[in-house]
Length: 91
Image 1 (tube, one colour):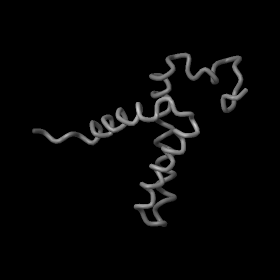
Image 2 (cartoon, rainbow, N blue to C red):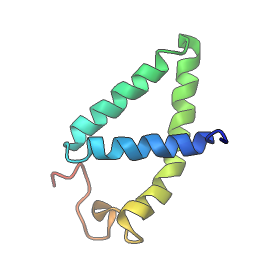
Image 3 (cartoon, rainbow, N blue to C red):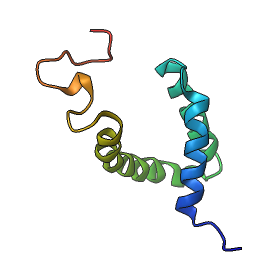
Image 4 (cartoon, helix red, strand yellow):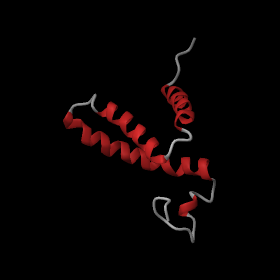
């Protein structure tokens, strides 16, 4: 049996996590993701963590547009649409 590619493993894990987080408020989802990322970072020595954070933020920023297109369509996130309020969703 052929070994799974890392991208396939990532897709599998993300697809499992989505339903687990679904329905929880954004602040709970954010805290879970933050704690998972922190668990990852503590596995690296201090002198590498800042570089990892910077590289991951760059990667995240490149992933936002295609994922936003998938999730919200061509119009984008409702709060980013022309004439809509901006902010944390409480406006």
